[in-house]
Amino acid sequence: MNTYDHDLDDPRSLFRIAGWMWLIYLVLLLTTDLILSAAPQALGRYYLVNGLVACMFLACAHWSGLQRRLQRLYTPLMLVLIAAAPMVANRFWVGPLPPGPMSNVEGLTLRLLPVLFIGLAITAWHYPEFVVAFYAVATALLEIGLQWMLPSGNSGTMYVVTFVAVVRSVSFLAVGHFISTLIRHLQEQRERLTQANARLVDYANTLEQLTLSRERNRMARELHDTLAHTLSALSVQLETVKAYWHVDSAAAQEMLDQSIRATRSGLQETRRALKALRASPLDDLGLSGALRQIATETAARANLHLELSLPEHLPILPAAVEQCIYRVAQEAIANVAHHAQARTLRLRLRCNHDIVLEVEDDGRGFDPQQVASGNHFGLAGMRERAELVGGTLQIAGQPGQGTTVRLILKDWRQKGSKA
Image (tube, rainbow, N blue to C red; front, side, top):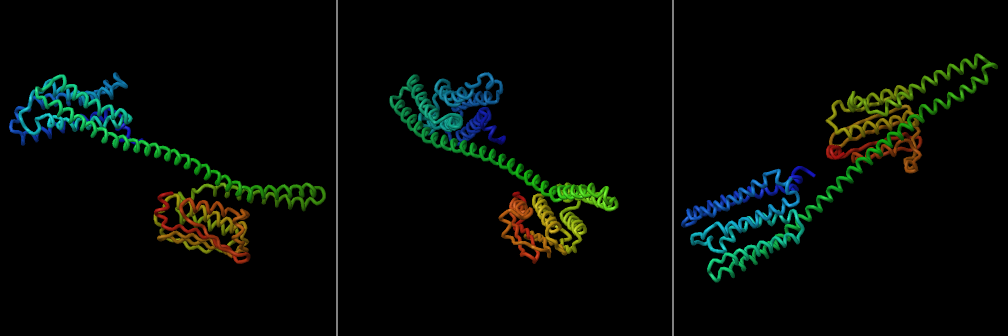
């Protein structure tokens, strides 16, 4: 809930707004009387009494301690003050007004109508519809009762007051119904928005957990391809060394040296795999530099001929887009080094209206139809990364004719900002 909604839920905020609207209305009404009335000086008591009532209401709205003392009675008493106090004050302390179109019974009722409408709106905001109906009927009965207690001497006045009060009550019922319906819809929309925000938070948490799970799976694959293979080979070699130790010590010594070299190589591979799990090169080198580094290091390690085509200057890309490009390139290059049996590695990146990343090799290739069966390395993870930023991953290849992995991000500015 934002600060504006919180202020509107606080009764004191609404009553302060209502009090200032009441005073502004009296000023506008006074200006109109000064311009149009034949005897504006005779209206002084009317504006003095009504101004004092409005100021008393505004003072109660700004008195913070009053709400703490009255607690649940605060709102109903303030509604009584805005609806009943001006009626009673006008009947007991305001004398007859000079003749005029706004000084008869209908005119005096019309003068009070905007103030009663303010009370109606506040009632509809805080209470259910039957309370709104009670407000409409109660204001009519109060006005009829005051006229009955203090008759004006004109036999037709009671009829006029009753007629005006009934018409006003019907108007209040209709308007109050629409206000209550509108407020109910607003509250339902706010509730749906709150629930949607809660679902969004749950989705974000789930997405974060899925991302962590994918990274753990990637770590498991990397360690399996490096540490597990090295330890397995080392175990076999050490068993052989043990068997040859007393039979052929020279051969055993040579195999021991091979085991030491394999251990060191496996340790380097493990460190490289663990380092690759972090995307720190993006922070240190930028996207072009990070792609160049990983391609150069992998090509040197796997004895591959490298062909690079990277733009000299890249626009500022969203972090999610940079991360996706780097991770897809990393996975695709690792697959070339580990599984393609290739001689050449080609890495191309184009960035204009669309972003296109291509990782191509001339190795043994494979049938892309086998990807659906889950028997290939990391392709599902690359597709998921592409989908997270609204991109697509294309895989082209045939056995014996190499493989091309292509990442396409169309309208990357809009999609990257949403990601």
